[in-house]
Amino acid sequence: MKNKLLIWATILLSLNGISCSSSIIGRSDGPTAIYIDEQPDFLLHKGLDLIHQMHDLANDSNYVRYVTTRTEVTQRIQEFASGNYQSSYKVFAIDNLKPFTDYLTRTAPNLDSKLYVQLYRSIPSLINARSGATAIAATSLLTGEDVFHSNRPEAPCICLYCFPKGINCMVLFIPQSEKIVQAYASWIINRQLGQIEKADDVETFFKDVLNIPDIHIEQLK
Image 1 (tube, rainbow, N blue to C red):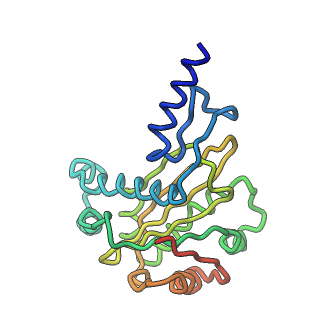
Image 2: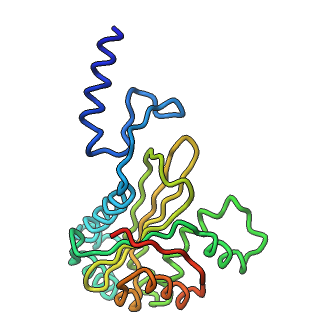
Image 3: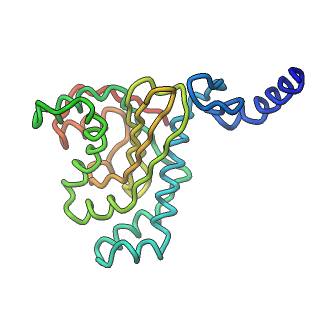
């Protein structure tokens, strides 16, 4: 019996070790689960998966007709639907969200720390609000969420994806207990993002738009 279990574990490892970065051997999905080593770009691909889901949603005409009848919102959604999310994009990572927390809590100094996740999730809305009500309406209808097991990240982080035609997405990763990670994806609408070329440009963007200085930005792609 032990030999059979060992054989099955070996087969699972060989099948999942290349393509799945957070695979679990066995039936346990709690603290006793065994995790296969993750690829360095695992979170980057997880974020892309969510963006592709939002892209599919934007292309679902039945969904769009159901959620809005406003022409200007539909036009904005069509821009998302027409985007190319397969190649020619840049990805920037922000692995220290303390500057955002400092900024967001200045207006609510007595906020319960348990609500920090909601603060982080409000970042896309704060940016989109600067582009008007249509931007808020369109982006709020096309969001993505996922929950998965991963050894990373160890702290909340953000990945900003910059695609052609000035289309951008932000994915927030929040680690929880037992190696569970929650991910939230949103479209970002801001003209200044269309001029992003390097990490310094992203730092300047957050300083100009949200008045948040001293952010460490790393370009992943």
